[in-house]
Length: 285
Image (cartoon, rainbow, N blue to C red; front, side):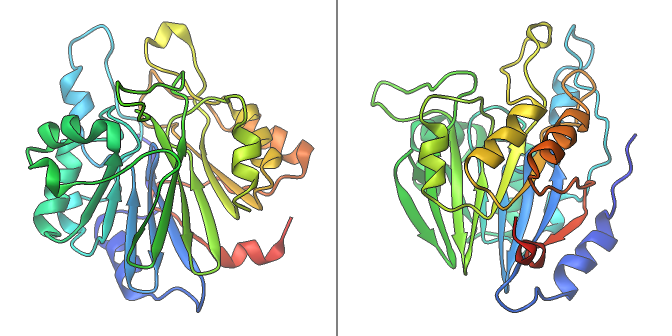
């Protein structure tokens, strides 16, 4: 089991007892594609998976989801969250055992899902669909200090419902002077770099677990593709994710790191529960 940099009480103490520097945000990787972003006193959770629901679901099957990394924190202890997001319906991005406890301890928390997934998400979370905030690719929404703009994601294809709404999305988050891109699960698609370059992204959060057919799950960017995408969209910095959660569906960061160095793309590798502060971005590219 891979140890978290901080977990439980130590993690909560760091989040709640320190204030980000003026005009800066702090970020923690929570494992898989989950990130916590702190801006002043507000907190945004991106695609949190903080349970063992998939390990339990697939136990004893031919596709076991054996957890590799320690859970950073019990979601029931995160009673200060303003917004939680889900980029698509897969359980490691829309987890009832994470989101239901979060809603219970944060009754006013906004839960943001793709417009196409509203009914499915409401059924999974056992709430009225009016309880959920929704967004589609090309749309923007402001929640507190966070402005969120949805962009398409290809997991493995760009997929729309009967209304033409995207089932998989990424989010461009603007807060203060900063712009953060959380891709959700995605592969490259035509026009992706051109679309994202227009946002002048400071920090990109990108999956690197790739796509092996024998895994029998939808694929993502390989490490070198994530590094090249960050470079191609002009991101000042990139942090990889979606690895080291399940033994059957992971990759090392080696190819990602190697390609970033070749491209002189600034990057950081985080451990679960580890802090990253936007002051790093002042170094520029």
